[in-house]
Image (cartoon, rainbow, N blue to C red; front, side, top):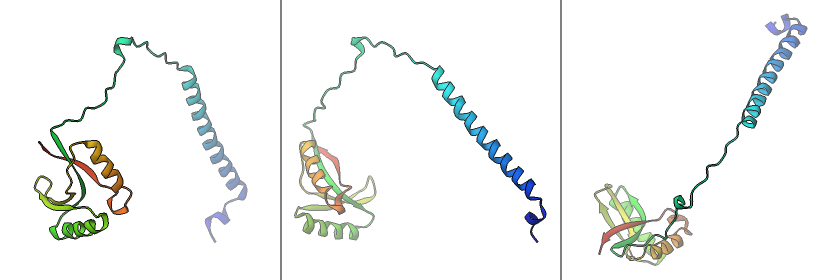
Amino acid sequence: MTILTKINPKIIWFLAAAVVFLFGCASSEKISEDENKTSDETYIFDEVPDSEVLKFETPVESEDIIYEVQIGAFSTKEKAEVFGDRSRNTLNKEVYVSFDSRVNLYIVRLSQEFISRTDAEKIRNELWTHEDYDDAWIVNVKSK
């Protein structure tokens, strides 16, 4: 025989009703307090003089930077070369594999260099349409 069958059903109903009442009242009080709090608060926006209005300028590309599109980075040379070979065939573009000591990884990049970041972004965006290259990114490789 379980302990629930020994307890009077009226007591169980009373406890259940008490729990529902307590939790129901607590949550409605919380909501009404929050509603009162937000309705009493008023924020008046400060006037901003015209001289303090921010002006955004179109970024000017530096003519001294060369951009490349990187399509992969690997911990081993073998994995990088396999990906590079597959990329040459898939993309019909020249790629190269090299070791980058700054990040301690073998990187795979398109061989084409860009003097305009906008041109590099166009190629990167095209690559993003291929599932294997949806994380391609642009790197600044050197100055002229």
